[in-house]
Image 1 (cartoon, rainbow, N blue to C red):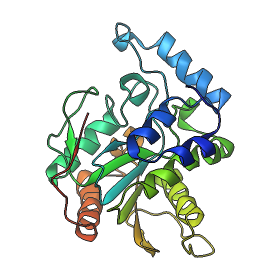
Image 2: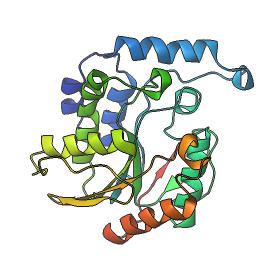
Image 3: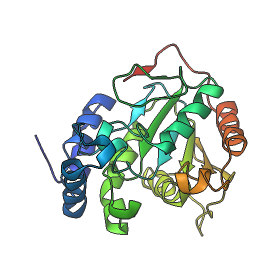
Amino acid sequence: MTHSDPVAASRSADDLPSLDAAVVDCFACPRLVAWREEQARVKVARFRDEVYWGRPVPGFGDPEAGILIVGLAPAAHGGNRTGRVFTGDSSGDFLWRSLHALGLADRGESRRAGDGLTLHGVRIAAAVRCAPPANKPTPEEQARCRPYLVREIQLLPRLRVVLALGAIGWAAALRCLAELGHDVPRPAPAFGHGAEIEIGPYVLLASYHVSQQNTFTGKLTRPMFEAVLERAKALGPPATDRSSVA
C-alpha cells in the first residue's frame, strides 16, 4: 500500500524488510515522485531497452552490519534504474571495488540487483531515497525522508560506525543521531574528508562522496577512500556470518 507519511511508516516498521517495504511504497515528495517516474519513462539511450525501477530505493546489505554507509540519493540512471543503491553507475563501480578490496564485499563490481552481491558487516543507505533533479534534494525533501534513516539506524543491532559520503550524508547522519537522543555538539561538527567524531554509542566518519565529480577529478582517490574504510572497519565489530544477498 502506498503512503505519504514517512514518520508513521518508519515507526511502524519492526524490522529491516518492513522498513524497506515502507521506503519502496513512499510517495511523500511530489517533485521527487514526478522526477523519478519521468526518468524511468524517458530513460537514456544506452538503457532504452531496460525496465527502470522508478521508485524509492531501500537500504542494502548485512542486517548485522557494524558499519552503515550513508550516501546522498539514488542516481537517475543508477539506483533509480536498477532498484539498488549504488548499483549500475560509476559511483557504485568505485564503491564496490573498494569494499571488495577490504573484504567487505564478495565481489568488486555490480551492475544489477539480484546478481548475488553480498556485503559483510556493512549496510548502505541514502539520505534521500528518490533520485532528485540535478542530484540536489531540497532541505524539505531531506527532512521528509529522514525518518527512514533514523529507523534504519535503530534496526541495526550491531551498528557502531556511520560513514557519511559527502556533506548531505554527513548532515543527515548528525540530525538522525540527534533525533535518537544522542548529544551532538553545537555548533555541529563541520564536514571534511576523514572527519571523525564519537556521538553516543556511534562513531561518525566522513569521506568525500564517491561521485564521478570527485573520483574522475582526483579529489577522491581509491587510497583516500580505502583509508577511511579501513578506519571504519577497525572501529566496527567483527562481521558475523549473516549477510545480505541481493
